[in-house]
Length: 202
Image (cartoon, rainbow, N blue to C red; front, side, top):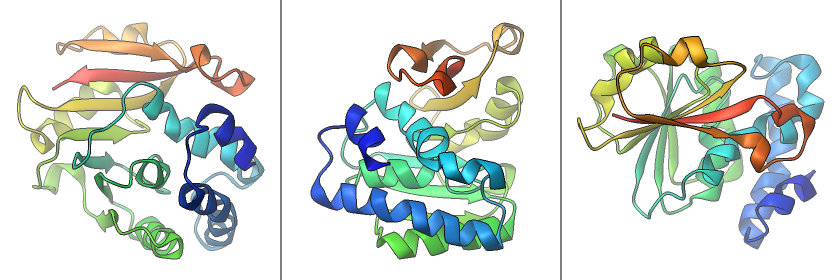
């Protein structure tokens, strides 16, 4: 499965490869206790979850020291794969569901990540400031932006949201400048045919 990642990210270091290899069994183990990803989807973890999370890295390469928050991190995606790929950045995942945060913390610890943390808190109640917001957005973008824009400095922040399907209607009310990046232009697997990264200037 690591071959799928090195196909698109051949520059991975030995430590990064090792962490990605260990990520699969850790997710499988925690998924038995907490529903992090769909039970039928766990066998497709590397393609549909880990590589999908890394889709953000095909759009932007974060500079050293970038502070990144994953809002609604759920099972730690895209948080944990991005933390492995960008060891010089500081990442924090937030979610309202305590069981999932406990599992994410367990996976972070199991991988020995020191640049990544997770916390049970709703985005509307979180008061830290970051440079970048990432998400596998579960709500519509206008709603998501409204609930999270206080997490970045106005006029200086960016949002990278992993989305799928036809976004025309969802993007109509978005007032901020945005760009839609088609992941099918980078990843040739069929799963990515309708997958996108929406980049929004906040």
